[in-house]
Amino acid sequence: MMRHILYWFVLMIVGILNGILRGTTYGTVMTDLTAHQLSTITGIALTGLAVWFLWKRCPLESARQAWIVGAVWFLLTVLFEFGFGHFIMGHPWSLLFADYNILEGRLWSLFLMWILIMPFVFFQLVRSAE
Image (cartoon, rainbow, N blue to C red; front, side, top):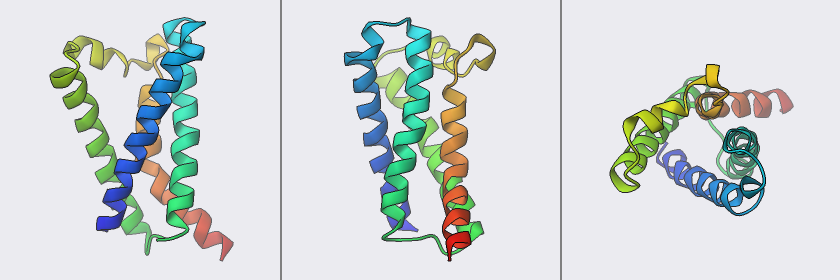
């Protein structure tokens, strides 16, 4: 289980690199909303690829373990997002919560849902391939 928590750090690095990619490339030529939407999609894809490669080395043992790992990753991601965003970057809470407003086209909550279900999805995929 500890190894899977360490994998979360890999996900955060992938997420940070995804944000840098957005800020230095396509985010400079499209609206902020469109860039965040595209970044959410690329974030889902890139974290999925990273986890797929990591879990070939250390697969999950059960569906229960997959859900626990997903829940821990979800919690760590939310804590990081709000802790880093507010206390390090100085963003107001209202700005941080705005990224979760799906009715305004903000898709970040889809990324968080992916973080939650991703371990179970990959557990099922590996299990069905056996």
